[in-house]
Length: 288
Image (cartoon, rainbow, N blue to C red; front, side, top):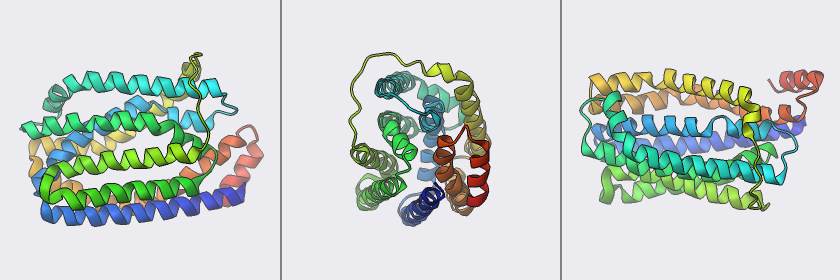
């Protein structure tokens, strides 16, 4: 088990640093091609879309990893639930994104609304492929996940660099959507097990206390990390918001990427021995 955790940390580290290197390099290059205002407009849309992704996921990713002995009909039911909720959210916020953006930010342009609408595609892709990513993590196949995510981000970053001259600000959502699609398809292929279409109902809300607690924690963390974007975007405008968002991402990279490494690898391992307190202590302290 310890060997699997160490391998997981190694592959997670490779993925995090390679992806971060690509993203930072691409951001710096794009910042010379696009105006700071473009990044500010994109950040406005991202604040809303990222929040919706957290809300619609509702901690189900962690539940899949944590839950032992998931049956095929339960996995199928969870996938169906995720797809249905993503479609409902897509339709709902197709109409609500504009008034919500007007509440959060001032001086929104037409491009801001259109950008947010296009980025709603991210919700569909995130939910469509979430279960395959979670199952790969559950089985601790971090090498497959790392390779798939690197290829996905490489596709997204290259597309942004190639098409920025032709599409301008629109390469920013293109980068995100293509990354999610490519890595998602590769995770689906890499899982290598068919999820049958079963219509039996699995009541995920039997775990409602876990889901509510985790969802509340994720939403609170998101708000504390993004309230500054809302304040700057509302009172200082998209130009300064764009400059701030680029600087903030680069500043946060070392701390965020390092803190994610251990948790990403150790959580599925500890879920396997969740009933053995002695083993949990041993694996945790050995890893840390």
